Image (cartoon, rainbow over all chains, first blue to last red; front, side, top):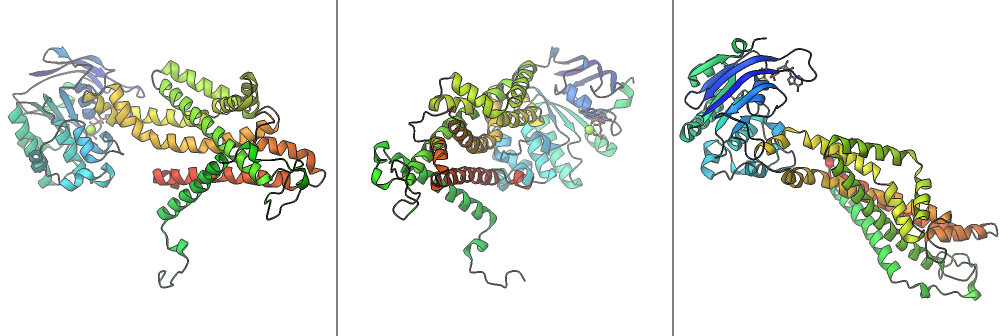
Length: 204
Length: 283
Ligand SMILES: Nc1ncnc2c1ncn2[C@@H]1O[C@H](COP(=O)(O)OP(=O)(O)OP(=O)(O)O)[C@@H](O)[C@H]1O
Ligand SMILES: [Mg+2]
């Protein structure tokens, strides 16, 4: 499968200047890609465009030659940089998980989620604990392409490796596409088959 | 050491939550008692007895008697019951209007501006005037007053709900829910409704005091319930004629009772708000 971005230009309505200009990008499920860029260079914004969160951009994003579907489950899922923003504050974690799919006990274990966390509210968990939920939730069986936007920045080195390993295992098993966004060069070098610098593809 | 002094006052040993619950329980109990006992009073029980005309309060007649020898306590209780019934009707209707308006506003931005315009329109006319107009227009009586109060009191709740729904709709978790393929209806039911249900309950209860006061004042002015109904507003306006002759109890006790009733609703509402939404208690 193939996730393709053609001539993407974008500026936030409140901003004067374009943030992204004529960005072209081709991703597939054969290679794990890393996207690198300075803070504030527009990595998160590009991720939101690729996954269909932001729709008022110029250019086109296609998945296997088709525009991203407007209705139903989206095959391209994004793991947010800030997990607390994508969780209803009045929902227990169990409900948060189940909104996406019926997670198995195995995968709970795989991602180091303790059973007792399931009955808590998002505000009662740490950022790293929340991120595990966020990651596991995005691994719905229907997800074809996964974009991880600095998903591990709030975790310590050991947990980071642990979670990334689990994600990569699932990605390989299900033959999914995977894009890792980070400003940690070493991490990208060890995990990704290839890397892209945002400043190289952004003609601003 | 704070705890070294042993306290024998049970109130000071309770925590905040228990106190809140106790306050709610007590005020609700009194309100329920008022309504139930008023239901057991038949209008025929309030007999005229000219032998005991214009008696000041006594143990036999706690609130005294009026110029036809009727027991004022019974009349007041019956009046309060009627007030609560009208208040309930008006508050619930008012909340339904508010919810409908807020939902309408969340469909698209034209309906949203229409709703804001309606809110401003209703707020720009003095409540009491509008209630009187609607009440007269609908033929007066309990129906007219209920409608009048309902159509003037939805604005505050509608505003609150509109802001809440807007905030929830633009949140990232709703966007993510859409990306999981959930329908608008599913999102409304699972994301929006649980977050606004507290506001709806508290909002409805807090309309009660306004509804009761407005009903009484409109009736007092002669635009509400008809004179043969046992309403507090009627009692108060009748007793005005007798104030000059020194029958102070005719107005004082029913007036006080109404005030206490309204206060009880307010206390219950504010405490339920504290209980259901602890964060807003600090605002
Ligand atoms: N909603 C928004 N409205 C206006 N400007 C925004 C908005 N979100 C982000 N920006 C701006 O766009 C620029 C790029 O933001 P973005 O979050 O894409 O950067 P990033 O590359 O992900 O940075 P980081 O590495 O710190 O996460 C920033 O300058 C930011 O201030
Ligand atoms: Mg970012």
